[in-house]
Image (cartoon, rainbow, N blue to C red; front, side, top):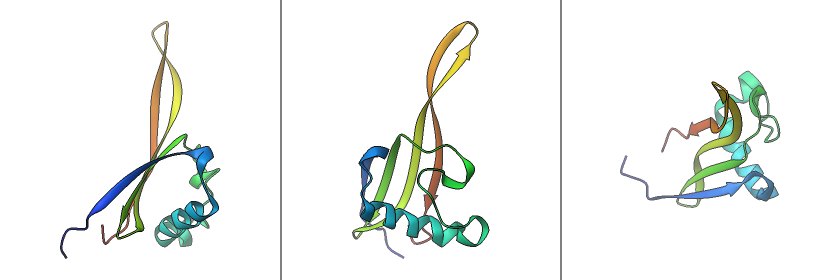
Length: 94
């Protein structure tokens, strides 16, 4: 298979449209539906939802996703903000 020209969109979770939600559901359900049920963007497979989503497209179709959410942790006595990454998935053809 040749290389697919791809683009990556950065999408805030609150900016999800019904169409984008359906497209992402198709990507996730193709991989996980039989084990985990239908994808829910508010509670994706038992993990916290994401604040920011990276959505990869090739030929107009979604072929990949990675999400992250801001988390606050303690490092010694300091509060530090980090990004929790998850929901990383790429279609087989990608």
